[in-house]
Length: 61
Image (cartoon, rainbow, N blue to C red; front, top):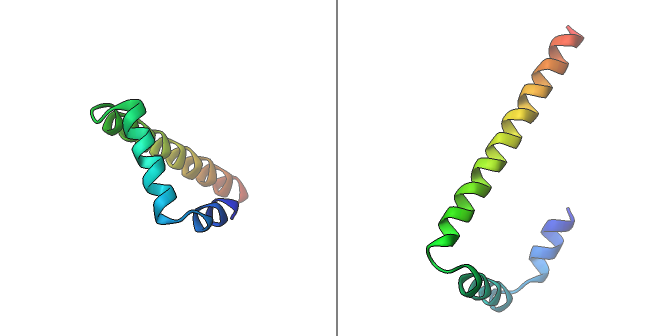
């Protein structure tokens, strides 16, 4: 919930400034690699969470 409040507080100019800073820090070639790694991490987290939930539900049955 706090993430949505934070994002709502940021306007278009602030988001553009953050994107420009990231582009300058990491360069155009590195950002897709970072996002790909972030996506893989999120996918692994979701898979582990679902697996844990399935195991928990099997124990209840």
